[in-house]
Length: 229
Image (cartoon, rainbow, N blue to C red; front, side, top):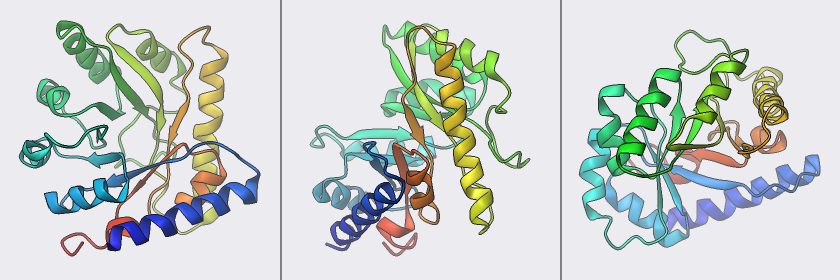
């Protein structure tokens, strides 16, 4: 099982990163299965991975028809979600990890209340100021606090994408900024503290773990190249 072997190597690298910074947080591996066939999801499950990430509602709908026997598996939406696809997304997924605006948070809140559910989400933050990325600006504290207070949702943490660069200092800075933002938000919250930091992908997950990541979203390093898993 190639994925099982890759997962062992990833976990070893995660533990080494934690040792380098003397951190002890639990780190969940989220397998990014977008564009991969259902057979890859099945192999992830057999390897012991408990979370997968998909970024297209329609693609996921076709794959998830085969999910009846997958117990304890968490299906995470990690892409940009259009508000007109919220209803379908909440039917398919267990969490939305990429809530990037108050408008989207409101829509999810309203739908969750209609379903009489508390739906877990992460707030996406653009820590790099790159125009092509979605997410709250780091200074939008009041907007993020508003989302945390919404009924029908449970904001469990924050998510970011590292910068499109090989400069380690810039990458590390974006992850530090997300961790410090989490601390700043928690300093203003009496209840409903946020705990998760979803940051780090195949090229930079070790830096993310060093800076406090509790989730890493891994595609190529875990599953192999897209279209050739």
